[in-house]
Image (cartoon, rainbow, N blue to C red):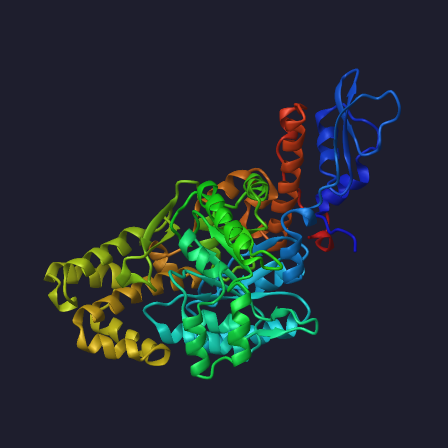
Length: 536
């Protein structure tokens, strides 16, 4: 199979000469031919570059082997998931990581995770049927999010995934293991013809803490598998086989990212998880070690190259994909994202873990959501129920944030949870503070919905999950065709990030060899495809 390239890269591959070039533009063109070797040679006019092996008498300053994007990351990851590139499009809840986004990434040779969190079962069911129909032979994943306040959602989500035969799940926001995520993994275990344990259900866990990573890197806890066996949810053979395989195939080190995040620096978090993974591998001696990926802050070729250089088996991109045409968010939200800078993010209360005080990272520029969401959490901490609010606070709440009477909001809350999780309403009926939490969660949930639908009169309340990678991407794309939101296609973005990462790695290799290139050669710049058929 030939290696797909962007249109700009194909043009360079055709026209770059095979004799040494002494001008900076010529050197860059040769470096960008990632599928071919690169020789930096000494000429009377300074360094030159060629893909042809230099003849006798030519002084070679440095030599680089081919480094196409397909060689970045781990071969084990690519083979395990059946992808061409060690690249995962992370899930963004509420269908923001949409069917279109997952399909586009799958067809580009990447793994995409559908943002099922927060969606009703019938909506997820439609997505799974579409994937089965349109991607019968290509890999894809579905997000399973930890729901400590709504256990039934996680349980029913796993039931749905197993019923549809979903073979890859990205588990996120877990603080500890639950019977549901363990069941998904263990229910797919069996012995192959060679006697080895086969895990039909692949699990990619996204974590921010070493202690949580360790739980996913070890076999499923026997207490949980014993309980699942007693309830008839797994077989005796599956419970036995669970002792010999890690709970997750891959663990993503989630650094400073959009949505749920502990805002850990990747350069601090990744080495800690790498040490944990290697220690467990020495102890357990798995036939294939648990893969370790890097996510959070991956928005430029330099960031991706740095992650691979640290030893990442794959990279995870999230925030940047939200600004792509295939994402499930609205055009107004994509415009806001395309204008974001590095400092335009802020932490705000999370709807799904509001009572626990858990926060997520959102876009600050162009919206009042972070400030208003924090105010709701302050009221929740100080008062025992909506009826206990001072009259002035209640009026401000109804006028500025809810923009309707509290009782009207509660009617919507009742209708929603009657379908989704009736137990929430039973608990709220007995505890006024619980009722207040559900009312406040209505605003938090609707704020993300308004951003997805592009509700024109609610722009100030848009909740847009976003990390600093978005600002970094915008700065890198400035002055190129990717600066405009209407030009951002997921396959193009993935292709340029990975080709740029490989190009950056080549530049770093030359620097280590003592070759100083002209400044103009140090940066990979994305060129638009020459034709629609030449997209990655």
